[in-house]
Length: 442
Image (tube, rainbow, N blue to C red; front, side, top):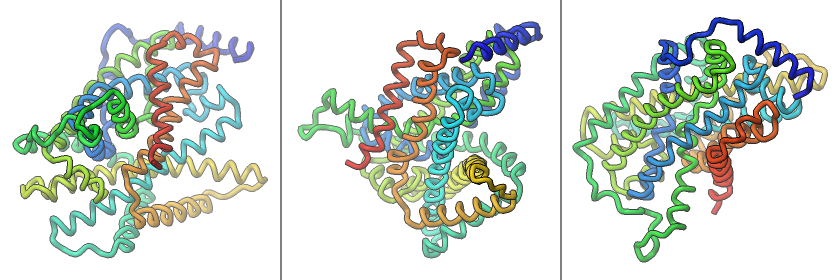
């Protein structure tokens, strides 16, 4: 940070000090509101794929996910929070924060990576939605699903029509769906309890050695295997910028770190509790062969369970809930991907001395989204492979490695370098998840 920038920061800080902030030592209603908002954002359709990989390593992988889920979620999102609320530009979004810390060229590179991290998830949900709809038609409605090339384009066109019909309406509808979805996950998990069978699980599942034993290297391999899906399932980094700025406005720059940590801790305990209950309940209801078949069929766990059990209520409710959850996630990521691509196109045109009107930009984006989502949904690549090879590594770059790089590079973040253990943990996990894109090829 330059001397002039440092002086401006001190002036802003002094100005902040005279404001009347809420008492950070007390828990306020807005803290509850934000904890619940983060809770709702953190649990999305990604958790529908978590049990498939979580159960692949038997009892040990479930124990590993229980141990790793909270620190992976908490320390990574805390690192991003620190990076953002220490910035003077945080109110303008994470791109402005990156621009302030690293310059214009870095912000352009970040924008591209950020767009692809959201867009890749969009493609994954297009695939999953097509599979969920087709499975529901054939297994629950007992009707022949349309050819995949037709079904996928109908679904993609329908979704993009909805999101372009009204941005504000879409966002409101998505916010209404969040808590019913979480409640449905809990209820379905409870509903599956009579189907639990501990004998379904071996000690290490697919990771056991040829002689049935489990060594330290087997456990490390298991941890590396499940880290990408943990990172993907619990990611809610786009929400962090809005969250931390509100806390800074409410409690002041001196208290924002402590208050954010307090709210995030409560939120993540609730999130982990709900998700782990769902994971344990679903994994205990199936065999390792079932999990392998769910992966082969490229279905979310709820759709597979609906096809496996002849329980009328569950058979219809589970795939419908999965369909709604995936739709919600698709629409939410579409909004983010649209805005990211819009900025890239506009800036690219300006760099060449051209000014594109908003209608032209909109038509380009819609055409691109329809064609690419349709083709990928039709191709039906493995969803879990997409998470391992593309989605999770891109998230790890943004959520794990970028904040850590900022902490050790930017003077304004120097005070956070003393968190040696948590910083080392975030860096190691980030590197391992990025490397999972290479591992997936072998």
